[in-house]
Image (cartoon, rainbow, N blue to C red):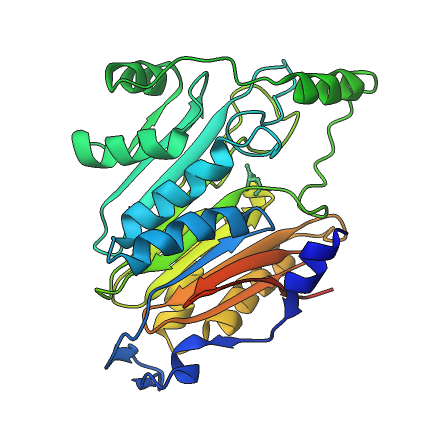
Length: 325
Ligand code: ASP
């Protein structure tokens, strides 16, 4: 583990950013009520969330919207070919084709999504266009690509040399047994609260490596990979998409917060539900991040190793989420 990362890495059981800065809020089993938003905050999955948060927090501190912060933040990761689970350079499916999934959501319920998108490196920006320029929420496959091209996005080859090599290595056995997220690289999900008290979230991925052609996970699905409600808070997922879809994971986290659970408790209770629905959980990884409308945050995962990045004030830090096992 690089030294730099180790210095950033902290362990936390529950983030109470708002309390730390004196923001008064109530959470007594009913809707939380904001009395005073003192500062914006941004939270992202995994180590690569640090890079997203840096761009996003800069936007937030200049009175930008949570929507701009999450979109522009995750684009940094989509554009990084070294991140092999998102955007350009993402691992391909079993046919050797890179297919991308993404969704974006605002606290007022506006949302957009693309899935099974090929040859366009910024699916999150296309998802935002779906939200803003069409009467629909989700567009997939060749239709999504056609729409992206019409919106002026550039067609390009997303399979880098490094990812092609890994794919060729995998082809030697061709065994598909998803064991994702145990290692530290995966979907980027970002949640932000802006200075105006609005929430937004973005989730973007190349999905499970070596997946079946046409497979779509939780990441572009509103309620599964991401859910945002200005009345309560926001949540997003990373991990085995099938497990998250089965439990409508992110929406359930938000609903648990609505009923009074803290962000971390809410993430934990949905992880428990996932555990209960699956017989074999030793290789199953799912992690959630959650951000309440008062700035309180939390995370939880099934397996150890899930990190999340937090940006607020002048600081960016990486935390190790508490895990069930
Ligand atoms: N949730 C993503 C998927 O299942 C991948 C991940 O986050 O590990 O496609």
